[in-house]
Amino acid sequence: MKAVAKAHTNIALIKYWGKRNDELILPMNNSLSLTLDHFYTTTEVQFDEALQTDTFIFNGETASDSESAKISSYLDRIRQFAGVQMYAAVRSVNHVPTSAGFASSASGFAALAAASTKALGLDLDRKTLSILARQGSGSACRSVFGGFAEWEKGSRTDGSDSYAVPIMSKTEWDVRVLSVLLESNEKPISSRKGMKRTVETSPFYSGWLEAVDHELKEIKTAIRTKDFERLGKVAEANALKMHATMLGSHPPFTYWQSSTMAVMEEVQHLRDKGIQAYYTIDAGPNVKILCLPEDEQKIRDELENLEMVKGIYGCRPGPGIEYKEKL
Ligand code: DP6
Image (cartoon, rainbow, N blue to C red):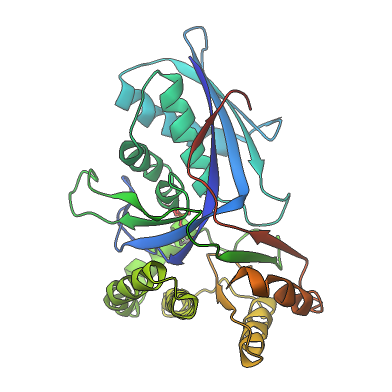
């Protein structure tokens, strides 16, 4: 009753920001992402009748009580789904540069959903896996697939039509993402709390929802026609809109720091010089730069001159969930 699965993180180019159901993690809008090859989580799950409780080892160490409680309550969902009552021993290794602040719940819950169901002998299709991963962390449902994937928000109250679908495989278009490490401090507010406050209090939230359908159409056309400029422009505009909603919240907040804005400005300078570079930013200060392979080195050279840049991690399109023999 043991299985190991590996899942990669993903970066949203059209963001998921806001839930219509907190418990089932159902989003207000569709989102679209690129799965990345560089950052991933490998998780081993072993169910055992003899265990008296769930145990969770994270990067070789016993997880904190709050982390363990989160995993256990997620495993309750899996147990309910599978109709079993056994506890599990979970070991997870996060292959994200230590303290890089890129740690993502997406790869974690995608790997956990895959390993736990496989350990219970279930042979699930990707759609069902995506639905289960979603219930751990929304963005995790997209990490089930490699390359570009879209999370369809669905409309049913039970979430049975809210899952990701593949848009383009990782081998079809080599778009690069440079993850620029600026800060590794804790976020001022988690994305879960941040999006909730935004939905409940920001007068700009309706504007976000109004714009997103057109942006999705635009980015899907850009992907289909491999039009990088079109892709970059819409991804950047979408990220800016998401961050704008937060400034209108009560109380207001932002994930940006002065270093975040310095890198945003640098990307604009690169474009002024004719280099195709666009940025996107999640619920944190770090910036991800989208580019094509031929421009990657030039962009690295420019960024390395900036004092606030603490690291640059180059990513290519990555694969979806993979099952492994061992951790
Ligand atoms: C800004 O998926 O981490 O990265 O569903 O509450 O676990 P929960 O949130 P999470 O939020 C991700 C927000 C984002 C945008 C995105 O990845 O689409």
